[in-house]
Length: 414
Image 1 (tube, rainbow, N blue to C red):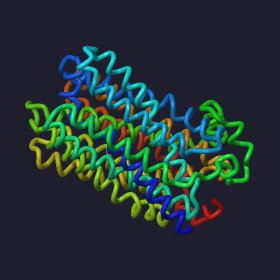
Image 2 (cartoon, one colour):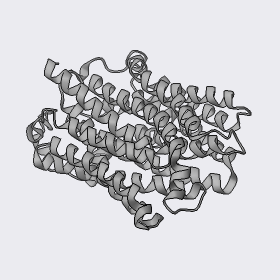
Image 3 (cartoon, helix red, strand yellow):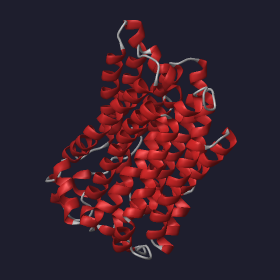
């Protein structure tokens, strides 16, 4: 890796970090923010507030990728997505002053999500375009994602206690900064280098979701990491919504927005910091144990958070959730790389991320619906039990497709 690549990797990591901070800043204050935007109090409004953004993520992630392939450039699109996302945050803050209702806020969330996902997804794609090893570059992305979520949850909680719209203002500033920072990154020529696998025509013929799924079908074993990725992100979406309400509810722990944000950080910090060492561990011992055992432990600990009798126990279990997530997440993504030919790695990882975003959406819907109908404990039991069940159900499939020892740097052909 050249010094230029290293500099770009740091800057792109900072862009990913900033986008995640801007997104998560809002989460701890969602219960109050949605009321200020004209919604009735309760978890249903918070659920739809988050669902609107992630629905746009799912819909537009492939669109931005196809546009960057067609243009042969990514930087202008990253800048446009970040600055457009910042403008959407400003529009969200203006809704009460304009006398518009919660429906208008949901529309703004959809528009903002469709823009922000461009900055996020293409910044990660630009990390993949760099030299120096795909594992190292994706490690930078994972670290930025985890730390961005941790910083956003802590700072967002503190700002929400000052005023419901302060996290929105801060998010707009951070996204604008991400757009400006992206202008300093060298744009790799994606028309030829995006097919650095030598398969230059593939990306030109593969701009859409349908072809991505068709390629996934060529390797049926990919459905295994896709399934784990879906359920893992479902659980993360559940914590982002239900966890915030759960920790702030006077009937449970009655935390402030600051306390709820700090509690989410107990998950995100170990999740970020341990991904690189646990990813290296999976290279040495294989993917099977981190994926299966990590998922089983993740499910059990998630249930534990929902039945914890006192806050210190719940907080400690949140830290364990982050550790378990860090154990399985890099191994699951590495399994995608293990299973596919280098020429179709980008398509396979794109499909993995689509399944992950659908998992977030499902986590919001299942978490919000189950909590509203049956209460917090039942919701934690359902989501943690699903993680546990899929690990047991797919154990033979993981054993069949996962190499016992992760492939050595046979990824050197990246």
